[in-house]
Structures are given as structure tokens and as C-alpha cells.
Length: 383
Image (cartoon, rainbow, N blue to C red; front, side, top):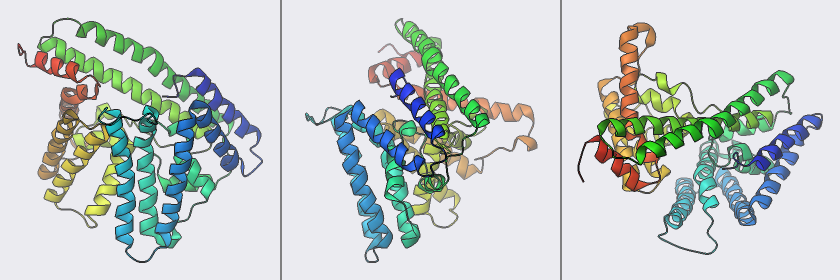
């Protein structure tokens, strides 16, 4: 959301320069970064600023409370998570026009669907580590409000961010060069390649759709989504690391994934990791059986689908992916070792995985009517 606004890009670049110039001040990453995050939000939207000020403060108190409470800890843990999920779900209903309100701002949902995952990760940390779960209030606020990852990730892990916060600002010239190039690459993807893919998609979709046109549109839309999201991630990783925090990779060569299980460890990797870590930790403390793993795979993919949006298309998308991953678990085919199979076998599995993904990727489109039209064309249906 922010990275298509040149003023926002220049503001973050300015913050990087300020951090570099004040590197001898050990507290620059805490105080200056927090001041920047809050200042940016208040300029962007005062409504967003006051909402996040209250939301972050309340969740910090919840984090501290959960780390010290001794009675009914599990109930408090589940209750605090439920409150956060209830909030983001309620805002989703406003976003869907089921509820209306003059105070509502779509930007709240854009940020909250990612930030609620960070809040829950912090609550997990407090619940499992109890009194050892400590975080300075400034670091917690920076964790939630960290601007490079505010609207679309990558999703930061609480423990890793707190460890980075304790380190002084140490970005050198070589790191600066690498990350500036990363930001330029991300901007090229988002401005040039996304424009190209979206224009081609719109042009082809205007005509009558038969099987080959619909399949072509799915492939073009896949490229569109990849350039858009991986471009955003490149910019977020670049700026995050220039600000002294090791933002994790979100795309790890997803097109060379020989199974759907591995694909979801490589495509939007931090989201898949978040759901696996938190669902498996909560429902399966020991090594799960194949059937348990299969069931949890379906649950995780359904939750990821609903996380993207409350619609029957996203629900079906989650079931579709979940069933394939469940089948891989049941057949013991969740991974393929490239060194132990022939190149033909490996790349055939990669192609099959991409076909499975491509046939469902169009669901990401916000235009439900266009999605159904493309599927009708794919199946060559007259209605």
C-alpha cells in the first residue's frame, strides 16, 4: 500500500539515512524508529494512528499479563487470541459492506490482517515462556508498527525481532548496496512488470473466453500476483534490513517446488510458516500421525483461505489446496529429494505442482464475477 507512494518511499529512505548518521547512539533503533513509525501513521491517517496506538498498547498489556498470570492461563490465552481474531473478523464484515460505520477505514483491515498474526505470535511467546517472556514497551510497539512490513508482510517473528532490537545499528556499505538493489528490483516488479501483466490480463479478458484463453489468463494472473507480491516483499526486506532488522524471506524459489507441501514453504513462506507453527504447536505437541498431519493440513489451508477473505471462493480454495497436501501426507510424498531422483522426475513433479496452483490462482482476484467467467471459459461452458 505504501510503496506505490513515492513520498512514502522517500520518507523511509530518509529514515535509513538518519539511522546511519546516528549509528553511534545505541538507542537509535528504538527511539528514532518508533518516532518515525508513529509520525508516518499520523500523517497518513489520524484514524489509523489512534487505532493502532490503542490497539498496540492494549495488546502489550495483554502480553505482560499473560506472561505472569498463574491461574486459568490457558483460558486467558485462548480468550486474548479470540478477542484479536474477533476484531479482525468484525472489520472484515465492514469491508464486505455487511456492516457500515463512519469510523471505518479500509486501511485498518489492510494492516490488521497481518499485524494480528504478530500479536498472536507474541501471545504464544508469553504463554509458553511465562515470566521469561520479556519485551521492552518500545520494542513491542516497533514490532507491531514496523513500517516496512506493516501492510503485506513478510510476517515478523516476535522472538527474532526482539533479538534484533537488542543489537546496535550495524548496516555497512556492502549490506546497504545489496538492499538498495533489492528495493530497486522490487519497484521494477511492482511498477513495470505488474503494469504489463495487468494490462495484458485486462485486454484478453475482454473477449470471449474458451479453454485456451482462460488457461492463458490464469497464467498471466499468476505472473501478476507473483510480481506484485514478491516485488512488495523485496522492498520490505530491503528497507527492513536497511533499518537494522533481519526481515525474513517471503519467496524461496517457489516455481522449483516439486510438491504442494514444499510450495507453501516457499511461496509467501512466512504466512505458511506462521500457520504451521501455531496450529501444529496448539493441536499436536508430539510428532503427528499421517492422518493427523493430513487433517491439520486441510485445516491450515482453509484458515489461510479465510484469512485472505471471507468468501465461498476462498473457502473452496483452502479445501482444494488442503486436500492435495493431505494426500501428499497420506502417501508420504510431502518432499522430493532432487539428488535421489532423475531430473525428468523432479521437473515433472514441479510442473504438476505449478499446474495445481495455476488452476486455483485466479481466486485471488477481487472480482468474483470475473473469476467465475474464467472458470466457465476453462470448462467451455455456455452459461
